Image (cartoon, rainbow, N blue to C red; front, side, top):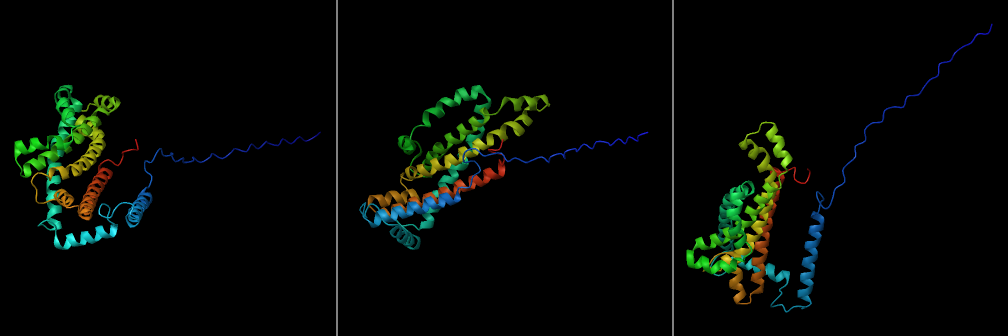
Length: 284
């Protein structure tokens, strides 16, 4: 009798593969670091400026060298210009643009949100805003002088009008970009009108509002020179226009660079505020 031995077949069970984390590829320049590129670009612009001035591509009267501009900045910093110190010129301009920005932001955000939520508000307010918004500030500058005189009120009002429209239209666009699915989901969960506005509408519109504020500051600084034409004796814009009458191009360059530096600081502040308040921007 033969002994039959059965051997159990061993089946090798493959180990479960661990999940592999796949990083989502970015689209465009969103989230990419551009600081090194920006610094290099700035250096190339300065080198090109210095080269063009040294080679007399443009007469030095019209294009001073960076060294000439730096020397003139030191002189203005130490001795002032047109009967006022550099600090007085800068503080006068900052007072005007910060006052105008506070008024424009306070008025434009609620009006823009209302225009995005109500067709009646949009129908009534859209026409006057769209009418004056494309006009250059110099077009209605004479009206500011006639109506409000030559004091600070006319200057601040001109800046408010220039800064109001970008913020208002951005707030309106932010509300209108709200996906209806979010609204319906919040309503299905029993959200009240106040909760719907506070937790859904306003956070969705906030990135657009902050973008509008950044644009408004840019428009405000470009309007500042026009605003300070109105019988001013202080301000960076006044300094630029006064220097242009005497072909003091180096002083004009000093004023332009100061405005550019101030605008950069304001833009950076809004970017930091954006990173703090809307960290989800571009990630949804």
